[in-house]
Length: 497
Image 1 (tube, rainbow, N blue to C red):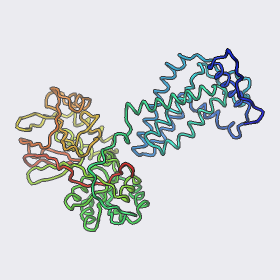
Image 2: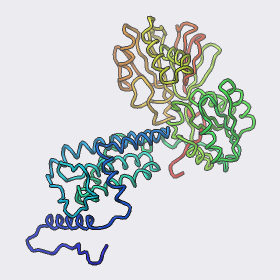
Image 3: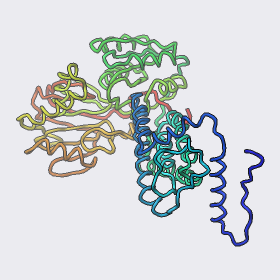
Image 4: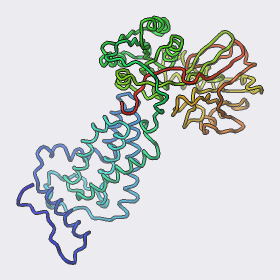
């Protein structure tokens, strides 16, 4: 600050504190207007204009989402939600409550001024509120992305004083409001870090410095090359085996022969196969998400190579429940879900088209074909009572914030099978939709839900399709499901690790 600039406010006996602060605010504004800002001229006005109507932040959210990691997608969504609420609060409450005039532009050099001056009142700054809300929302979900966004947000806020459209106090108040809104959004919708699965029961798993003793099988069909390569860079002593989907089971068996820890990179079906081998061989399992949905890895708290690598190096792991089912001589396990009815048919239909048109379009096409087909509900004797069913779903653990479709689990060792059924009847599509929109334990004439530890089903016609963790097979005879409590040791980052 120049030594000849006096920012003190003279003490006038009858002057209120508010007037003193207003005078100081004006002096700060004039000081900023008169000061030379090297390098700011080409940047700050453009940033200020780019942030109009949230365009800059929508572009930033798109760029963050393009990184294609679950945490980045959540961070972008949280940032936009915080920005939307902050903008609504400023425009409906802030500017209507405090009708402050904009600063006089006389001290601001013409080259700095915006071509189109805002016509709304000055307090608080909507741009600063939106910038702070977006940056804080992103940071609460992903500190790394938050640190990347924060300098841009600070520059946008600063640009409002630099271009002469706001007093410094307008900007400070807007930034405080925006950050507060982001924390309010977090209180309403907790971040993944706040709602992560409990770090118990802890498993006695070996620490693998450099990854020595880890053999990881990666399903090449899941597009795992980048993720497996990232883990290899972090843990150079780990052995990574890439293979096609037809060779996954054989490679897992061979890997189990020489591994201290069995690793897998792929979608939920690939992880299911690895869990079955790990259970049979008594090995701990390291899961690196590599498919489309990766429900188990994300519910576990493993989102990328960095978090898994940290858990492996420090020997951090927990035990989790496993679901098991049988039909005649067939046996299988599920880490996520088991289902009968229209969903297995949808999965099989989706797999027919996925290679030609992509996973998501194939899913939409499969849903339309399955729901519009002329069919009859399956019949099954569930716990001694005969039911016509469009769908039976059993989750390995309780799913939250979901109706019919899987959401997420907050506890992987709760000992429950989360069983939901959609009863047979007319208009299956309407019944399935109503179940999807309902709460997890809602009962109605169309659907019902219950928590059990074991389930037995008889009367299901042989050849009926069942799905477990996205893999489809046929029913052979009477069906049973049960929980294996804390049966599998898995690596996951723990608090403080």
